[in-house]
Amino acid sequence: MRGKNLLIGATALLLSFTAVAQDKADFTPSGEANGKVFFNYHYDMSEGTEQESSFEIKRAYFGYDYNIAKGWKASITLDVGKNDGGSDYTAFLKKAQLEWQASSAVKVSLGMIGTVQFSEQEKFWGYRYIMKSFNDEYGFGASADLGIKANFKLSDAFSANAFIINGEGYKKVQDDDGKQRVGASLIYENKGLIAKVYGDVNSAKVAVAGGTEKDVTVTALATFVGYEFSDKFKLAAEYNQLINGAKYSSASDNHDLEGMSFYSTYTIDNKWEVFGRYDYLTSNTLAGETEKWNLSSNGSAITTGVQYAPVKGVKMALNYQGFMKKDSSSEDNSMVYVNLEFKF
Image (tube, rainbow, N blue to C red; front, side, top):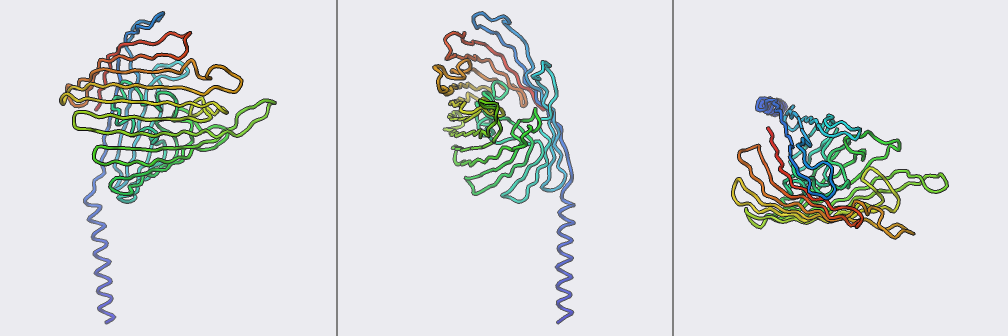
């Protein structure tokens, strides 16, 4: 009996080693370079404009993805764009993440990671090379940051994620407070419908009267619903709030922003699409004031145009972009764009 048990144990151990060896044999490490460029020509029809037209490269992304082992992937991406200091082409580290597929239901990413505040919205909008999604465009959040996140597959229809990040975005380091942004989202997808709720919080010290400081909690909230009625037409709407923040990385007591965005696409064929979008941004009025604190930037934006995709990896669009300001003393913006994206 003892010999039989030893034989069974040895056989089981041999089979486990064989399975591991086979698993390793089935996997071959591999990598792939990638790149993406956003180019445009625009003509400014706004009254009183000084620069009527210009060619621009707004963004250039260069990256590399490497599959280290089964379930393990490393990615790095450089974002070449305008620096606040004045340089038009400064390279920033946009992504430097290690991704671990812990199971079929759990994936963990750490390092300089892509955030989740508007990832589904941006994908559904589909025209990032023309205009950022609402949260990104108006400073409600950053597209990447230092930290860790976990994605969870809850069922066929529901997924969720949770994260801890520095909160300053990928162009800045951690602030002096050393306090992180914490948040989560829940997503539902089924038969053309996608719905999402998102929230995050981050506290920071701000100066108040008397030369003292107080802790202020910045909160970002987002809701999003999109529906693909058919292969031809899709429609989406989102509502967003930023509480106690002039920007996601700039705490400001009682300074709130909120806004809505609606967008749709009609696909004519595999090369032609027609699209449209409407944004509305507003802010609150501070105690003792008569005008909204963000009046100079409040207003409505309209983007509409037609896209042509001649070959895989190339997209171009003729479109109109207008911004109608709430401040009656400021001139509205009115511009015509020819945008181009090419990637590999």
